[in-house]
Amino acid sequence: MNLLQDLKWRYATKKFDASKGIQEDDLQKLKEAVQLSVSSYGLQLYKVLIIQNKELKSQLRKAAWNQAQLTDASHIFVFCNYTERKNEHIDKYIEATSKIQDTPLEKLAGYGDLIKESLSAKSDAAWQNWSEKQTYLALSNLLTACAALKIDSCPMEGFEQEKFNTILGLDQKGLNAAVIAPVGYRSAEDHTQFRKKVRKPKEFLFEEIQ
Ligand SMILES: Cc1cc2nc3c(=O)[nH]c(=O)nc-3n(C[C@H](O)[C@H](O)[C@H](O)COP(=O)(O)O)c2cc1C
Image (cartoon, rainbow, N blue to C red; front, side, top):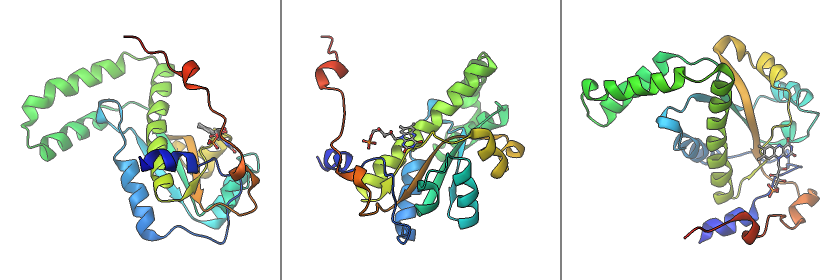
């Protein structure tokens, strides 16, 4: 399976080659991979910013413990979850399902109500946690798609969310920067690419129950 080779090839890139940029057709493929991500109920309650602007990258680097990936990578994907639950998100999803799957709205209304009920039953903290979790599924698709295209990436939580939210004007949009991923091409000088992967042995990681 090529996928396993790709997953062994990828690593959390510490030093990108700032002279190399991602081609537009590859960027489109990455976007499609993110778009195809699974999400609870299929709601995709997040937005993904893709930042190429140099000045903005420099500002973000300062809010990310000065990690060099922020300025050297070709593009920064910022996965932003919605901070408020809104019925309109669910209504839009139900409308889209009705249209795309050619199903009458009346048939889907009960499902929409069920989602609304289930989401409104969550505490604010549980909602925030749940909606941030959704973004990680999209992040995972991005990392895997990058590996398949031999594009390097680095998943990152090492940044100040509030500062990112301010710099990117996310508060006004009801969004929150949950997790980010600079993507681009590894620098030959990045020694971490030569490190062996540290992963739990399968016998500790898995327990098969038959
Ligand atoms: C959610 C998440 C947040 C991470 N945050 C950072 C980060 O801020 N900076 C960084 O250099 N690496 C970060 N990493 C990379 C991990 O340290 C790395 O994936 C892990 O050590 C496994 O190594 P590998 O990805 O090279 O196989 C993060 C990884 C994940 C999944």
